[in-house]
Length: 109
Image (cartoon, rainbow, N blue to C red; front, side):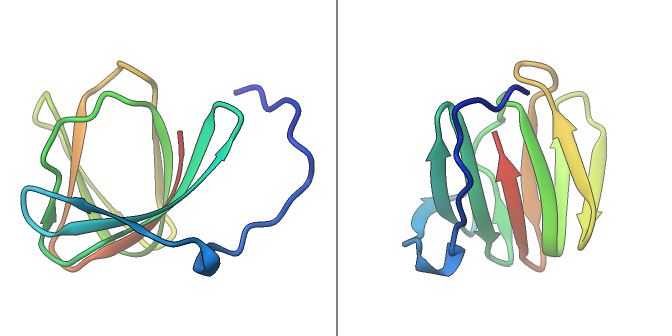
């Protein structure tokens, strides 16, 4: 990742109004900032969330709280807990997220 033309700045995530994204079940709440072509989000998934789609976008994802299950389209599954992360390239392995208990994530894509 090349990060260019980005002056130093801070983000108060609490001050950003979340947008709601309905899952197949549950809700996702995104607080989003854009820096050039980079999207940075604080995402909160409600308990019982299941994504309504398979995602092929690349991400770097860090679990701040809770527990997130990620299923890959080949059947592999991974569970992230607080302090864990994953990374995946664009158009590499389609994935979808779910959580039984809820999760808060920091996502760069």
